[in-house]
Every structure is written in structure tokens, then in C-alpha cells.
Length: 155
Image (spheres, rainbow, N blue to C red):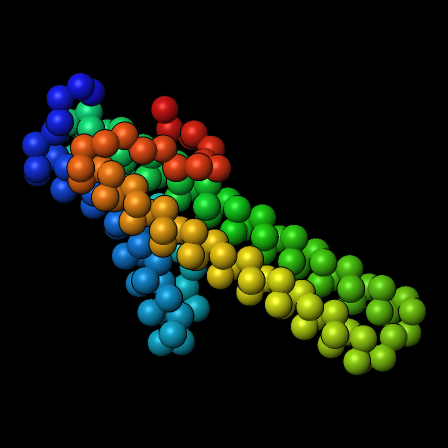
């Protein structure tokens, strides 16, 4: 795409990126209210915007695919972290049972695991906030941007 897309096209392209942040905020709000909900809304919101607007412009199509690829990759990374955390926790409990460890050793191990998990989760949230806002600004300005560490599911 050589020419700069018009403002309406750029706004829809920007919404493809920002809708994922809105979805995360909605999920955190629901969890804060006590509703334990995990739906991949961070994938669903950009998907809906992209599907309904991709025929308007190749710019929206490109930006929508980029936003979806990043959100799908991020969701996969989060699931991998959760699975690895659960495996580490089960391994710690197994080792504690085999060695007849006391509760203090288990508590120390769980505190270390929780600290690592919270640190990694916080890093992923900050990274997403920065990258999504950066991509949304680039999309609005009509400049190409590719998310780092993204698996390209949609081409």
C-alpha cells in the first residue's frame, strides 16, 4: 500500500489494535467484580472489527491481521506460562511428599513461584500496553508496523 489511507480507514485500523486493550480491561473489571471469566475477548474484539471492515481497505485488512496475530500469540504465551506454572507447582508438591518436607519448604517454593509468575505476568501486561498503543499510533498515522515475537497465523 503506497498511498496514505484516509482518516476513516486509519481510525478503523487503529480500533483493530485498541479493541484488544479494551477487551483486557473488560476482563479485569469482570474478575474484579468477582466473575471468574476467561474468554479470549482480546481475540474476539479485533476479529469482529477486522471481519466487518477488512473489505473496505487493504490497510484495515493488514492491521487487523497484525493485531489478531499478536493477540493470538500473546494468548498462547499466557497459556504456556500457566501450564508451566501448574507443572512446576505439581512437581514441587510431589517432591515435598516424597521427601516428607514440612510446610515451610512448600510455602517458600510457592512464594518463589508466585513471585516469578506475577513478575512475568506484569511484564507481559506492560509489554502489551506499550506495543498495542505503539501499533495503534502507527496504524493511525498510516505507517507500517509489525509486532515483535508474533507468530503469523493469518497472512
